Amino acid sequence: MSWRKNKPKARQRHFQKLSFGQLQGVVRRAGVQEQVEATQALHYAHEVLVERFGDGVAVHVKPTYVRHRRLALQVAHPAIMEELKKQEEALVAEINKRMGRPEITRLEFLFPEKSAEEGGRLPEELQSH
Image (cartoon, rainbow, N blue to C red):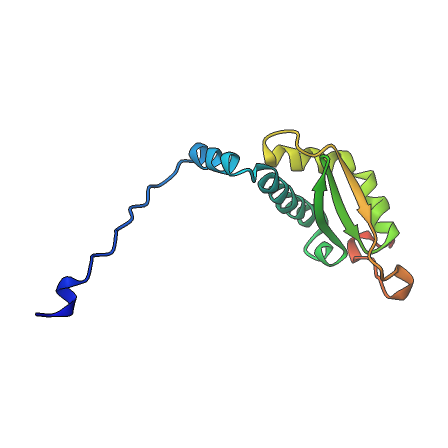
């Protein structure tokens, strides 16, 4: 008699596909809805910035976190911040449009420890010609 015959069978698990609505319910019940929405906002912010300013913007502007419906952007240079402030309303509107609801109310700007004088450079798209 083989030892395999006496071995208990592993319990088979069956997975069911979830609709988007069901997935939202699972996320809400798990208590991570706020974190998921913040992650979505960061993703959409990156997309919007790249579309408006080009791929090089990712080196100089980084969506960092969402707190109290404010999206924090780490910027490498004060001139970048000024350009983003000029377009803040349009940027926020586009991010909210992609989210499907008014999730973000305004932008906050953070500066890294390395200052512009220490080597921070403006992206070409934002330099004066």
